[in-house]
Each structure stands twice: as structure tokens, then as C-alpha cells.
Length: 486
Ligand code: GDP
Image (tube, rainbow, N blue to C red; front, side, top):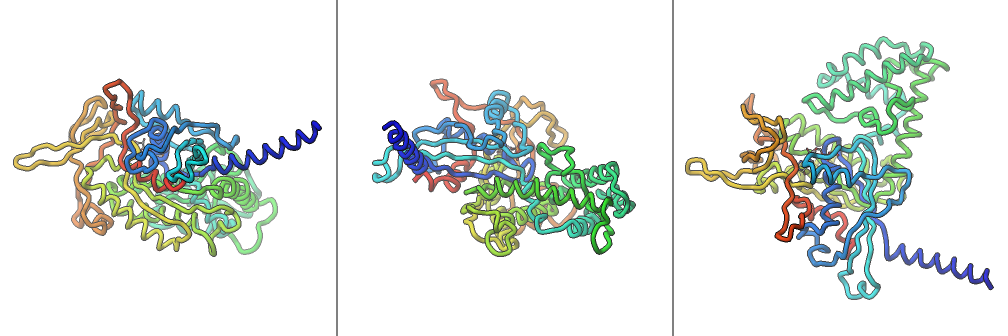
């Protein structure tokens, strides 16, 4: 009798588990973008606004009062670091400093209890959606093309790129070292390390330099995560490879083995275990900084966006075919930090990003998911106002510039508020994409870009602290998860 009881219980448990899966489905949302695009700030603000019932008028489920509560739960993947939400909130809200940026992959589960919009749905008690948010560096995505290249092709491509005028001075040291290295000489750890280090230094310089060059693989050379110093990262391309196979025991054989190990142990598992399981994706881009830096940086942003979108391409010709079981059906390309410009320019920024995205979609022959674009600020660090100048009333933004920021001869102390006329984005996206500097050189950038401190949170009359202010975060939420809360 007992055993029948046990079996019945197991069967019931299984059924209950299945039912729970139906009532409590999960949605995996990937959050990516190149370093400093705003991933950490976006996730922190998204969670903060949902947990604290933020002002989200364009997020339908919240607006119609159907969200009963949202709370953090244990994430399903034990081997992935947790997104340090509490630390990031403490930095933003208590200290009013920007949190530490994304350095590696991390995850957070936010569970939303809601009432179904339909009477039919409501009959089956309350709905529950577990949103698994996966934060990862965009740099890692750009490794995907390596899966289609052997060491020879990787070396050739890297060498040709390094010789281009835009890069050759940054790559000078590596080019000299690599040119002097004999691929057929016996493998030597110190030579491998020197080559790897100088190659990594060259890749990093491309990012730090004012030129803000597009990111080149291997992605872990820029964002090593927990692999810093490991043999899988101690390789570099070798120019002047002879045809045929590597001599056993040679430098070339060693580099080749490590390159293949990088693909096998780093790139492939990352795509299989993380990217292939995503349902939705937001790609954050720092369009403001690119527009501010000039046409080369904008062209570069477009190139990076094209490469990122190509990673999510489905079907024939996609390197992911075979790795993907599930598919991403919605991708949002969002320009953050729109709080740096007046709201009159928000639609212009969005039009610029739309143009960039359209071109990227076309160039990546992208298909398979709905793509939308948005200009937003995950955290709004400024308010708007006007100042009179003679007869004119000028729109300004008001905020506390970070300590040490400057405009002209003025240097800010990080404590006092300032009104800044941020400048306008051009009305026509085409003009913006040709570059804001205009034809005549040298020119002031059209937008005056000052970094602000995070805002002081408002309190209600009852003394309740409101959630983090934002611009259009609700639109992002509606596109990314709204349909799952219907
Ligand atoms: P990550 O590298 O993609 O994780 O980038 P972060 O989220 O750390 O953002 C990088 C920096 O961009 C922050 O330190 C802020 O200075 C700035 N930032 C990001 N999001 C916003 C935003 O919504 N508004 C403003 N004003 N600044 C932002």
C-alpha cells in the first residue's frame, strides 16, 4: 500500500511540477552591449522599478494595476555568478555613484506575480512569470566568427587588420614582435606570453584610444572574466605562416592548440550554455558618446552593431545553427543615457539609432526576430528647465555633474547642481550620421556632454522613497516582456 502511495505521490508531484511550469513559466532576457554601454545601470533600474512599483505608464500590466508583486528569487543556474543587485542599488541610491560595470556574465531571477488580463486567465488563479536576466559583455559575442576560422585564417585576418592605417601605430609593438617570431621554432612559453600580452595590449589600446575602434576578437582578451592569465588566453595570431601543417613541438603548433582550446572551452560553451537559451535580447549602445566623438566613432558603432546582430541571425549561413535549440524572437536595440539631452531631442536620437539599426539589419542580412529601437535613460540623472537669454528661452537640463567634469573653464565639484544647454541633435538622422562636426574643421561637438551623478531620489509626502527615475524604461519593458504578462 505504501509503495502505491509513494508512486501516486511521485506521479502527483510530477503533475504538479508540470502544472507549476505552466503557471510559472520563465523567460530568459539577455542584456548585452559593449563595455560602458549601460548594462549594469539598466538591469538595476529595471529591477528596482518593478520591485518598488515605479512609474511605468507605458508598461501595460503595471499601468492597469495587474502586477501584484515582483520579487527576487534564487536563480536557476548555480554555476553562474549572481548579478549583485543590492550592491548596485546601494551605490546608486545611497551613495549616488555609478555602480561597478559588467566584467563577466551574471544572472538574476525576478519573479512577477500578475493577474491575467482576460477573465478566462483569471479563473486559473494568479499568473507568475520568472524573468531570468542574463548580463554579459558584448565583447564575448564578437567571438562567434572565430568558430568558422582555423588558426591560419584567424592569423591572416588579424594581421591584415593590424596593418590598416587606423590601427598600425597601435599595433606597432605586436607587429614587430610577431614579425620576428619564427613559427617553426621550438615552442617556448615566454615567447607565447610576450606575443599574447602585446597582442592584448594592442586590442585594448584600440578601445581606450580616442579613436574608439571597433572591438576585435578574441573577446576575452578585452574582458577576461575569470580566465585572466590562463593558457587558453596565452596565444596570439602568427603572421607569415607557411602552407601545410604545423611542425610538431613548434611555436605554431602550440599557438594553434591554444587557439582551438579557446574555441572549444570558452567560445562554444558560452554560446551553447548561455546565448542559445535566451528568449529575448536587449542590445545597449552608447550612441550619445559616439555622436559626441564624431563620424568615425559612429561608423564604428554601426559596424559593432552589425556584428552583434549577425550573431543572432538564424537559419542558413548562421554559425549558430546547431547550437541553437530555442530562438530569440524579439531584440531591442536601445540607446541609453538619453537624459543627457532635452526631451525635444529624444525622438531625434531614436531616429538616429533606427537608421543605424536598419543599416546593421540590412548588412547582417538579419532575419528571424522582431527588432525594435528605443532612445531611453535607464536612470535619469537630470531634470529639464529653461533659462532666458536675452529674448530667447532656451531649454536646459539640470543635474549634478560628476566631480572633475568641465565645461570651458569651469570645473565641477560633484556637489552643486548646474543647468546646461546640451545642444540639439540634428533634425535629420542623415545629417547626424554624416557627423555632428559638420564639414568645416575644427568644430565643437554639437552636443555638450557632461557626465552627471545619479539623481537624489524623491520622497512622497508620507516619506516613501520613490523608485529610480528613468526615461522610457517602460517602453523597453513593454516590448521585452509585456506580451508574457497578458
Ligand atoms: P556596462 O559596462 O555596460 O555595465 O555599463 P554601466 O551600466 O556600468 O554604465 C557605464 C556608465 O555609463 C555609468 O557608470 C554611467 O556613468 C553611465 N550611464 C549608464 N546608464 C546611464 C543612464 O541611464 N543615464 C546616465 N546619465 N548615465 C548612464
